[in-house]
Image: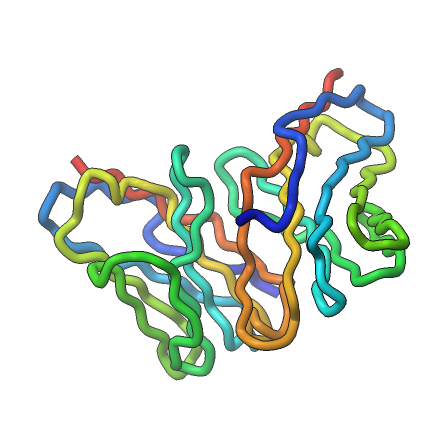
Length: 111
Length: 115
């Protein structure tokens, strides 16, 4: 069973903030939330990850709700180059768990 | 620092042949994972190697195999190719084994077409 649920597609106007939601209602205490994206015909690219605190890096911000059942990836000023499939992945960093990619959200940035 | 490199980038084979794909991880990375991506099944995990040992294996038939060398470079082999093996094969490297961290760096992939 999939650990995350994401909308299949979203549009966002260029220059606006893109907010990509992810539901992970069965997340356990030691599982992290990871975000990757895949631009057409390229390998996936790591964006950001977090456990329970909000995180920010040069690419994006990750907002995790207090109950950790959902999160939002924010691209603050979307550009056309941000058009990609975005994957939200829940994964423990203990044991031998691998990354499991779902179907993701296809984000299209509109000029 | 150079990224993950995969060779060849494109490959055309016929059914029944075998193929070997190569992956050179980022310098210092000891974990290499392989994935298959198809339009129908998406990104699926094949296997992971860490320090020359297979640590994890996905749900693929035995025709799919791999190995890792002492310099962390990895190869994957597919024998007796089938039409359904046509896919983008992606390699990802990481400093730690994937069980300990989820930050992986992916190569550009090898596009395999089986005729």
